[in-house]
Length: 41
Image (tube, rainbow, N blue to C red; front, side, top):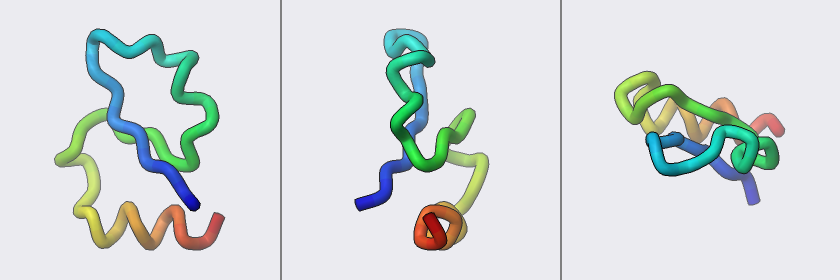
């Protein structure tokens, strides 16, 4: 299973290292594009 992370001020960025894709915000990519990006992982 692939994971997509969208950090917030309360989550340390080093805790997101296992995510397949880290976005700066939810508006950075449409969900369909984010899903495509992680489906090749």
